[in-house]
Image 1 (cartoon, rainbow, N blue to C red):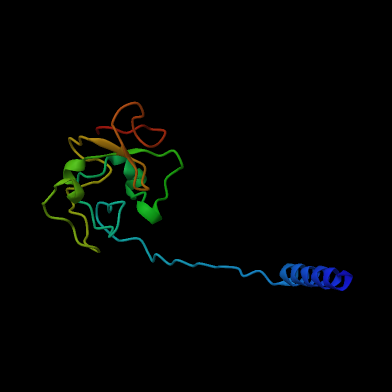
Image 2 (cartoon, rainbow, N blue to C red):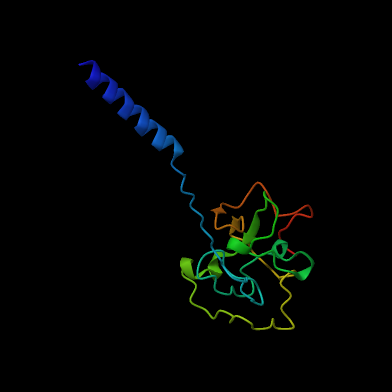
Length: 146
């Protein structure tokens, strides 16, 4: 009986020793999303990141005339929320023309000064929307109509 206990104890110690000495497998995942779409008035913050038409994004999305980006290429600050007009969103029923990637903006359409812009919801650049109200604009200078 002592021999059986000794063998059982030795086998258990060996299993524990081998388990502790086994190398850990490390998983590594690399995702390459590629460059941001080149669009004249920005692009939607959801795949396939199609170009958005003039008037979808409010002026706060274009500080200095440069689009802040959206989705995986968003470059705004952590608490950013900017106005959009969801009437220009294909996921919300818009069926009008969309600019093509690489297309140049029309000279009379300045995205940082959209005439008569009327935002209908706030977006954070990462795919999240919220109701209008409370926080107006995405940066220190505010936002809204210009």
